[in-house]
Image 1 (cartoon, rainbow, N blue to C red):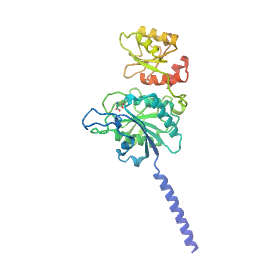
Image 2: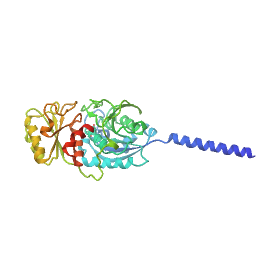
Image 3: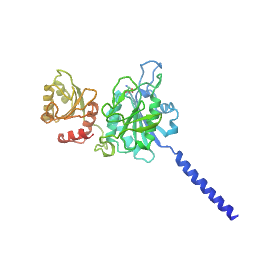
Image 4: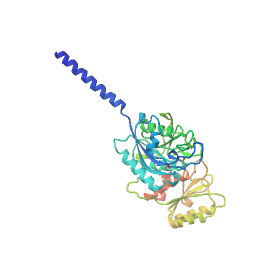
Amino acid sequence: MRALKMKMIVFLMVVTITTMSFGQEIALPNVKILATGGTIAGSASSATSGSYSAAQIGIQTMINAVPGIKEIADVSGEQISNVGSQDMSIEIWLKLANRINELLASDEVDGIVITHGTDTLEETAYFLSLVIKSDKPVVTTGSMRSSTSISAEGPLNLYNAVAIAANPESNGKGVMVSLNDQIHTARDVSKMNTTNVNSFQSPIKGMLGGVFYGRLGFFREPNTKFGNTSEFSITGVKELPRVDIIYAYADMSPDLINMHVKAGAKGIVIAGVGNGNMTDAILRAAKSAYENHGVFVVRSTRAATGWVLRDNEFKDDDYHTIASGDLNPAKARILLMLALSKGEKLSNMQTLFDTY
Ligand code: ASP
């Protein structure tokens, strides 16, 4: 009788331990999906029409359209905004970033996915990469075709983004951008084509990794500062200083600099020709903008890819200009806004551009 009792106890212990470990095995990572709008949430009256309206459907409808998503993560959605990303604003960035920092501070959340329009996706992703204080994965995604389009790619992009956010290998990689089976760093990626599903590319450094129906691998590490090691913070920040972008071209007028200074810009990024060049008159206007109004001028480029090097065809110190390196104008603007908001001095600006 005693032996039988012992056997029962051992059997129950084994059952309990097995159930516990089985339970652990099937506990799915918690991934929160924050929706902001875009074509991924867009719809059209016809599946074969290229005309559509962005930001029409809500997050729950988007989640429901992805078969198998609940088998790879415990997903829940939250609507942060519902806009075409051409209407993305600093106000929404701050709301989004604060919410992400709050969610990732909790043990309940393992990763974040953000659905977003593709037009300004790289800007939002880069901004977030500088101000999110966590090593947990944050993956932004979108689509080039609306949710009602023939061969809409949004559901697979969302499935892959959730798989990336749910995978512990994605920790410490900063904010990522994933569309079309590719994974990119927020910093290196650009929208390179207006309509193609293969629009997102990292022309200088290449992809960070790849993802195929949720199976993923990383090919390299990001090589600039972000996340926990970033010195930028949005704690208590309600707005950012105005920074404008001016597109350079042959024979451009120096009035442009003065107009932006008058309008209240605290910084100006020039999408320069070639290696961040501009007319001599603009250069002199840039010098005077800093000397007379304390306005910082960054030299970026209108070329699709390549570095803007310091002291290339003239000495930057002579004009108080900062070279953007391989940051495109839109991203250079974000870094300059954050640097200005923390009161950064001109003497340290180039180092920041070389670091982030
Ligand atoms: N205009 C759209 C947007 O950025 C384009 C897209 O999402 O693909 O919201």
